[in-house]
Length: 110
Image (cartoon, rainbow, N blue to C red; front, side, top):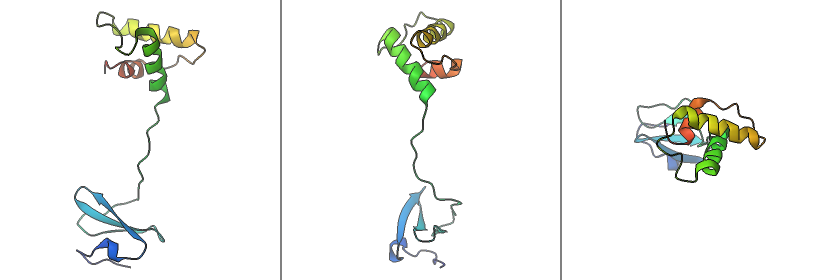
């Protein structure tokens, strides 16, 4: 089935409209084929997924336990923060193999 340019996707059976940067993409649920009503053509249908960041979440929880919700004090160096978070994780039976960048992102330093 080919859609004409400017055709309304809701006129198609089993179709739903999915806006993408000002263009309308029609996705037929039965065949999972994608047609574009504009100049853009989508290569695959994507659904929003929740990004999982378990290491960052563990580092954030450790920082909250160590310094509260305000985060680490400004006078602490990045090295001290990473060392304290890694020690807290080890002490509480969690893997402490979290990268420096992940810990600093968790406390808002990156």
